[in-house]
Amino acid sequence: MKLGAFSISLNVKDIQASKTFYENLGFQVFGGDISQNWLILKNGSCTIGLFQGMFDKNMLTFNPGWDENTNKLDSFTDIRDLQRELKTKFVEIQTEADEETSGPAFFIVVDPDGNPILFDQHV
Image 1 (cartoon, rainbow, N blue to C red):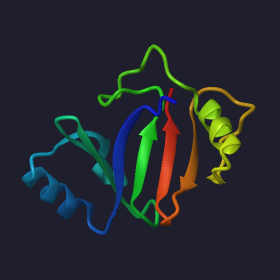
Image 2 (image 1 turned 180 degrees about the horizontal axis):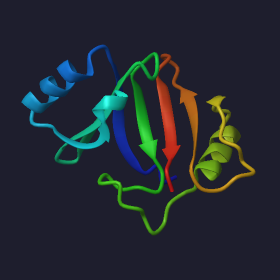
Image 3 (image 1 turned 90 degrees about the vertical axis):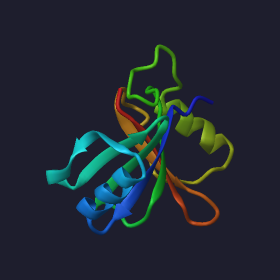
Image 4 (image 1 turned 90 degrees about the horizontal axis):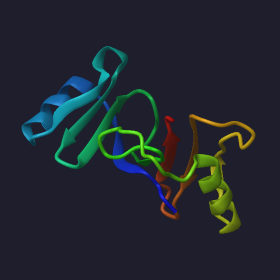
């Protein structure tokens, strides 16, 4: 099962304060739009997403089809195939991707401790 690039998506209260904090830890802005209250920061192979007012909890994020620099992978497991495989393992899907579509889609599962995990395919 190829899950793609990994990052943590943080629900922040003040995106500017969080941006400054993580820049002090050596992270640099890699993408996003602070005027829309979201940024992606990187430090080496570590990626953090800062999101103000977009979701309730911090979450783990996997991006099938991308490497850690958002380059499209030649080979990857489509998000709908990941979802179907997880269903066969009795993993409850909280928000489902439409399996009749292709291309970009997402689904969310929640681990036993209540941590949301976003599978978000952009290609």
